Length: 238
Ligand code: F6R
Image 1 (cartoon, rainbow, N blue to C red):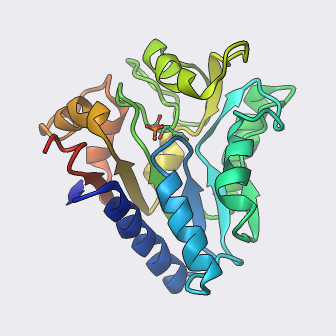
Image 2: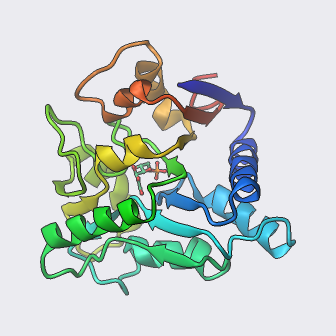
């Protein structure tokens, strides 16, 4: 696991954008794994800027998102579908974009279909990740055992609390979600995790103490041969 510490969040985003640009240059029809949350927004803005400037052409690339609340209507302002439309897909053209269907009649069948689509695409070339304050990646919440494939997850208390900032009063916050499983994440050829801000200091310290903790999903990534964690000084406790 490679650790890159940048001065600022803006530097984190530019560094990550360079990795996306190189990936698309090397393989225009890349399969990209995308994330939501606050951290990737700056990266998406940078990708939009470069795409509009003609510096990157995503038109042959396909994307799969890591997770989606369940159940949630696609049109709900806090669905990850809405998030991606707002922050990236309405401004950058991809060959195809795919997010778990938060309205699926059968969530388990949706998970199986999702995994099969990623498999048929040949797996993820470049996977973007964030990290939860509890060490989750995607919505793989701390546990003692983990399904290999995508699954319906009960969101952890700390995740619900951290994400409650997005839901306004009276808006019901889903307590379950569909998440990509460890198998898809581990088969991704390159993983980049973006981390920003002082609320991530504790989990970053724990992540880099040189141990695998079964109840910290992100620490399992030490077993992957190609992970780059890109953080700002604030997240590194500087
Ligand atoms: C969302 C996802 C989550 C977030 C994590 C950090 O698609 O995969 O694991 O990356 O919850 O979220 P932020 O960036 O809001 O701190």
